[in-house]
Length: 335
Image (cartoon, rainbow, N blue to C red):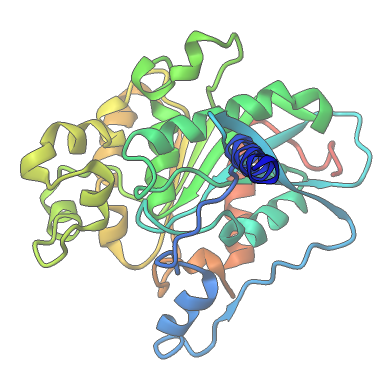
């Protein structure tokens, strides 16, 4: 009897300990969006491409699996890439949000891009965020803002200029990045703001082939495709446009353009349906004098940023745009 009770107590203690452990990743076998799986889909039409290397060169420091926010016992992680070269000046920073239809993908998909930006003197972070099967809209926006706040809170440790932080993303990550950047000060998108004096604002947005307007006919034709049950956007919002029209509107960056909107680079593929709404958004930005740039890489598929020969040109475009917005003179600031 005594032995039995001891076993029961030991088992209960083990369960208690396990329940208190931090959960950093929730496995989902359906999450197959990687550069490798995308390569298999594209290689027939683009036989010259190769998956961009995730090798980190000696001159770049990689710090992996940093917890940037907790939700109960759920921890979200980021990976950080920064130049090893000692520089007394604080560096600009960029946070990357991966794509995958709001319900799949991994932060490692943006590792090659982050390395390329670190080589250009930026502190670059790739973040994981809660996908649609774990948390619906707008949880991903909360996560992206939490990552920005974490980076700004740790700016001194990693040599970041808190006035030179950009948020970037590709595909669904581009939409998340844009919405994150244009909703500064709106409580629904930033619940942490109530408890923190640290800002989650950014000074630039990089939208790589991501939607700017869910409500447009062109966007709904694809994102609300009745043949998909649910569509990727429908799964994120918890319903089709007819059922959740308010949310589809609310999640569209185009409706938040103000005089305080940060400069935006729209880096787009030759597949125009993925960047629907950016032209109309620019028309709202122009009268307010908000800097913008549109660069289309000709002949490219969606997800071009995952592959050579497009990775380095993409990083060069982003770095040049940010250098201009942050007024960085490379000849005076060898990095």
